[in-house]
Image 1 (cartoon, helix red, strand yellow):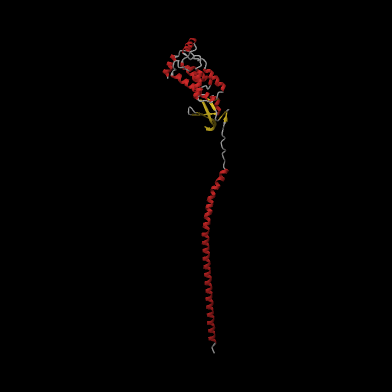
Image 2: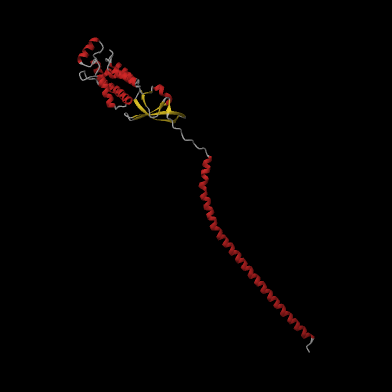
Length: 285
């Protein structure tokens, strides 16, 4: 029969074995818990990485969308800014309108192409844009100055008829020096008066039977003829060539265009022998 000591040692051994089993099972449980924690941490890290990688592609389109939305913002800013109103097209001022033919005394007949506004020295001015086709020139005249420069509308048919009748009259040449007469002729040409211009054409016209003109006389005659024919052509809606033929036809009807007529005119004192004056004018030219 075993002794009490042997039984106690056996019980102690049995308890140690149970304790070791308990420790081993606890360590296994701890190990399993650690493994589960590691797996969980790996899963969490993997999920974090996955979430990061999955968020990045979504962020880029958002940035692109923001960039794409920028141009849409600009029109809103511009809409808030001050919008300039389109300029009004002017068609009529001071009784003159665009497309109309007018007479500018210093240059003759021209056409109004437009009425425009310009800022000159800080002041806004309205200007007539006048084109002179034959002279290949464009002139800008302030609308407020048309009366001062003498710009006028075309002559009416009755006044044109009066000018043509003037051409058939007797030439009136003053007994003065040519230089003074030339100044008077130039003043009449630049006056813009169609009847005064017709008087210059009448007085300076020379037929084939008459003495030749001096150079300065010829220049003034051609300038007056050009001004007169251009206005008659526009008023009567004919060409300038036809207008010149009509003028020359009226001049041919003058009572004093032959040699005998000139001799009678000199006797009457209506015409002067201006050969000396013509010679002086030629020398000056």
